Image 1 (cartoon, one colour):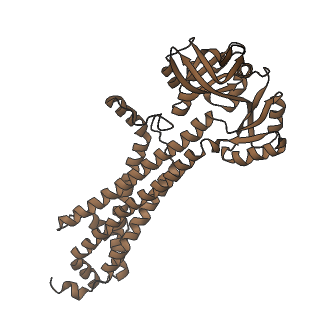
Image 2: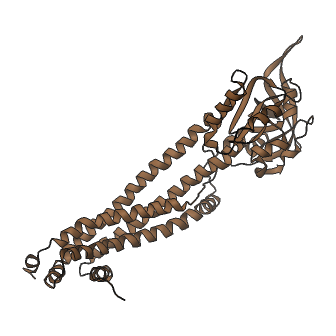
Image 3: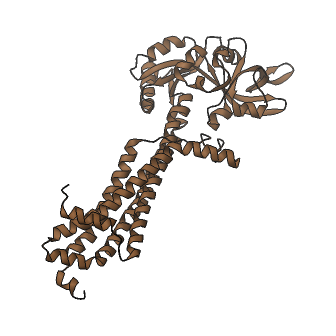
Length: 416
């Protein structure tokens, strides 16, 4: 097989056992450092992608993309929903009401936000149905005052399916005997686990007609409509356009960026900053190749001089050492990419196994928005990381190779 001279000699230098074992050691550490840098960068970017994905699909699949609300109860929400569905970005609508308060049971108290839902319509705008541990959303029937809640709230109250809880509204009823808090008994008909502490601990759902009665509205009156968009990142603009179309004096819009936007932006910014920092680590590892090749050039001055006297051009000498440095970069990048892909695909299971062995929880849902370590490998990130590592490795070969090409045969052979 025909191979150019500079490729053949460069590969021989890479494989050959050098007299100077320290040079070989430096070459090996350069390759290992580059591999570790690529591995860590792929792994961390995959974890950040996992957080980003879980935020978009799981958390934002539970909270409304946007709501159109009115200061007064809306009687005909279907007509309002039909008008909203005319917008090309709106995929589905559902009735929407909210009420904050406290749930109590046997002396235990838990603050809660109750979302009033229509079980038949809620599945169109929410993914809550995928996360029920017990019961279902369809168990919410009008006039029965059933309630579904997250497993953390249920555990804190010590309740299960069929148990009764008391809802204490933040309002009082004035009677001739004095002022009394508004109370209502609910029956637990479902328990869900999303994995997000904010949702599992503080969110509950009741039938829209039951909450309307609790708010002293008519059974078909709601606070507004919940919207699901084709592109949730267009939610602020689209929701504002809908509010303007429907009547900005009668309705106002609220979108997910007001409640979870800061968290999402923080994840995106952290991914960018961590990616930049890790790229600097890869750059440091790649530029270790410079020291390796400088030592190799010093060690091979006699060989360079002999090649020059045999007719090798400075360009060929330069190409020999560029090939050698590039081979180190290619092998280091390839090893790091393979290990990084394996780690990214298995990191979630590995961390879960480690948590079960140690009996501790690395991600607490009370602090973070999810209680497990997600990972999503994106091949675009792998290609970008590998491409950056290879480019940096190639650039690191230029100066030592240039120095080798400037070696004067007579000067190199003077003391041989």
